[in-house]
Image 1 (cartoon, rainbow, N blue to C red):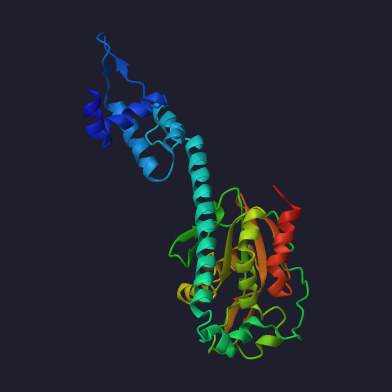
Image 2 (cartoon, one colour):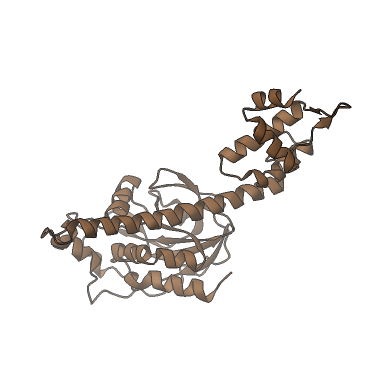
Length: 318
């Protein structure tokens, strides 16, 4: 078939076809008169390039998928090199998303500051003393002791657990790729106007989830620069509740919801009970390539924990 027919069937322009040829991605037969002759295999290759490009994979990096088809595989992603290309593209997109999220959080903060500057109006968070109480830790909080409940975790494989995040996406913990993922696990986040469980301040390690999240918010860009590919907060609270926390605290990352404490059951994570609720004990996991690389446990003080994680990342560069 002629180039115009190939372009029509594949849904691209003739200019695009010539570009793919210039990269050596397709090699049509040459007729005796010098004209190019394309066949159905070329149509499929061009369609594959077009599909991958729409997913954000540059045309120049579609070669592993095309080689997979050329090797006789039914699907272009049946080969290990294709899977590696998927992972690379996912990691790059994740980095871009997180960088954009951080910029968005900064813009929101700048907008809020500018909107109230010189107006004489006190921002709601400044006149709400209850909200401030959640950000301020009592001086006499009990320090959690190391009971050895997390000693078995370093080097353990991450379970194939799928959790919903506050952006509405399903996150598979064992498929986060080779970049480091920081998951700080916490009992529950308080909300202004909502009572915490009875005796919450007297439970070692219970109080401080909001200051801890604010710490990861404030050091988010530093954590990325130090080698963290992603940051997640994780608790047993529902996605709707966590989404309000993300918006109220202007968090530049998403929270994961595990209402059934599936991660605790799969990994033997420490937990405790209060007022009939089973909650995670506070700890942080550093995941990489499907394995738990490092564990922070116990965590104290929670408002300084993001700095502790940042220090570890800087001391252990990849």
